[in-house]
Length: 309
Ligand code: 3HC
Image (cartoon, rainbow, N blue to C red; front, side, top):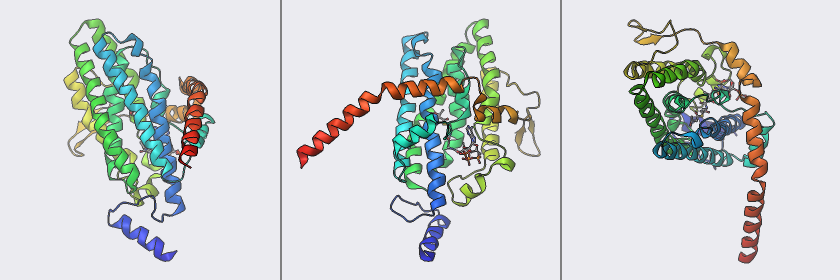
């Protein structure tokens, strides 16, 4: 065992990849299944907020873009469930854990999409935050997760750009459209900062995840990177971020920003967000309605396997 642990440690220290057939500490495997499964759940649940606007998109072009984006999120979920399966996880079991409330998905998807501007703001802020959080994961020590992230990040860039472009169009529109964008930014800004997780001082997983080079930066570091990246974009867009304490700090070389309402974060994680019940009920219905497809695929695979015998 000592040799195997030493070999694992040397691989991590040399910034090399751990692959599915390599020996790994049970805790490393468990942490990866936890994070990758919850990441996958987030992608699938994340289809709901924007899916809500596909039938109401104002033009065929916007409808086609939104359809492509929502379809991408489904694909991201499938890559990530496949990455979890390389660790011995069972996709059906992961879905059951999600539906039983025993595994999480990102807090951000428990907020409602109340106006069409939300489609642009989600692309700009939520996918922008996702990019900040996911680009470092391309250098994660676990091979299948890192490789899944490379393709996902390329598609996230499209998601972020289409959102920002949609908002640019609205900001060059009428006063009502500009007001709709500002109202949406006011609702999504703080929940987007919460996507990066609790403060480092309250993050039980960060230290070990960074030692294993699963996480390459801490929650607060990536949150700060997101704020620094987004403030100039907000200025270019002509919107005001809803934080009176937001200001450039030349000593730090970063933007200072106000205190996040961690009680709201904890409440959403505990299931008391605006849409938690709705999101899980929708996912449960979709899972039940899709049972016949899974059964048909299994029957076909079994028949096909018998033919090969
Ligand atoms: N929503 C829900 N749960 C959260 C959370 C959030 N925003 N932030 C943290 N948590 C949970 C963690 O899962 C952990 O609970 P657990 O131990 O039961 O899993 C607990 O709060 C403590 O947080 P930690 O910081 O200790 O946990 P992690 O080290 O796992 O860090 C994380 C949290 C930064 C989200 C990390 O898991 C991560 O980077 N995950 C991969 C990226 C991801 O999942 N992003 C979610 C959004 S997906 C998305 O944006 C799709 C895009 O297309 C829009």
